[in-house]
Figure 1 (cartoon, one colour):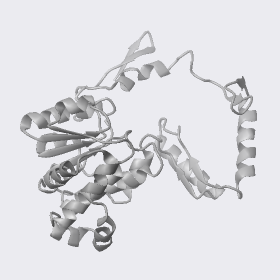
Figure 2 (tube, rainbow, N blue to C red):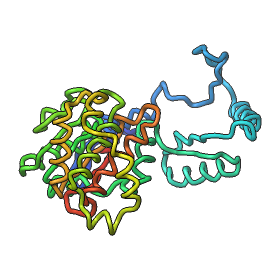
Figure 3 (cartoon, helix red, strand yellow):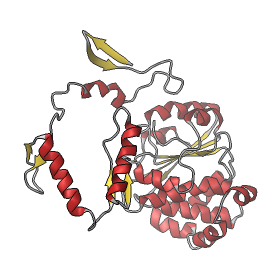
Length: 311
């Protein structure tokens, strides 16, 4: 909600009538009004004077657009690659993204994305399994029996924090997987400290345990998934002992985590929106993690599946 004084926007505050936020507003939202009339806001294009040097000069819109067009023409046909439409999220952002996608298609780009780098790769990986978001914060707080905060923190997902607290008061078990003891760890029953960039190894070894010990939901796998036999073959060498050397988590703890997760139907994984998705092939780690609810059949179950990645 906007706070206006003498015709000027002076502040923003949460809407207590909103069923989701109930008036909560993150730090970014609380300071959103500062974007308007900010003296540091760029109002005209700037062109870098020299590559590798942080020196810029003012330019007209005509010059800037012509420079962009000329460089696109030079690149087209030689190294057509990923078109990033980052920055199109304004009012009517969905329409802007569609136009950016159409523009990329006309240029012949192989790939394009309007997403932010902090979560775009994760969304791509999860999207490949069809589990981009299967559950809500409200479902989690009301129904989840086990919540796995996989790289999710209360700093990057502050609105989720109060739902976690509510779920814990109700008796839900909380497990945190992170590279550090985050503020979420203080609200957790167990904490697994993992080496950076090794999330895929942990997920693969958990699948190894679940399949080897036949803890998977046979009916769900048969009726609602594809490629199970190939997955079984793929994860066979990825034992807990193998993963322990890579992740820094003891093999027996990996086995215990896999058993706990597989034996709890209303188990929800909250994959951090900005955690593991900033390195090479990090989309593959998100994809591996999102295979877990498909194996255990927690998709479509109240309190189960993959939870919200932002908020």
